[in-house]
Amino acid sequence: MKKTLSTLGVLALLTACQADIGSNQYGTSSVRQAAAASPCSVISVRQVNVKSDNNAGMILGALAGGVGGYAIGSGSTAHNLGAIGGAALGGYAGDKAQGALSSQTGYEYVVRLDNGQVMTLTQGTDVLLSPGQRCMILLGDPSRLIPY
Image (cartoon, rainbow, N blue to C red; front, side, top):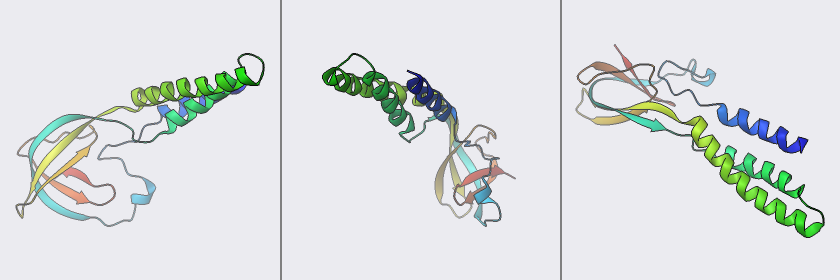
């Protein structure tokens, strides 16, 4: 039981960690990296929901459920059935927990570059740009829109 609780604790910590998708957030790998920049204008903005696309919650939930399910009952058949059932339920619960805990709000921007090309970019809510506003699109990993 202690192993199950420890694994569930790790699951909770892992799924609570969200990627910071704001335009003002830079990872250390982005520092001293050049990015192409193009002036543009915002055509439209819409609010979107951004969810994590990894399987860590499902995997850890399945592991925790399998360990917990194995501890139920006595005899090899009961242990095996408990582990299978626990893994299935734990995986489902871990996937749902991660989805709920890692969901963020963002904005999807449609911009027109000064050369006429139209592009879209989704980023966090730390900076809100308005239709018609001049901005700069920074093309890199990650790309971002910044006002100027």
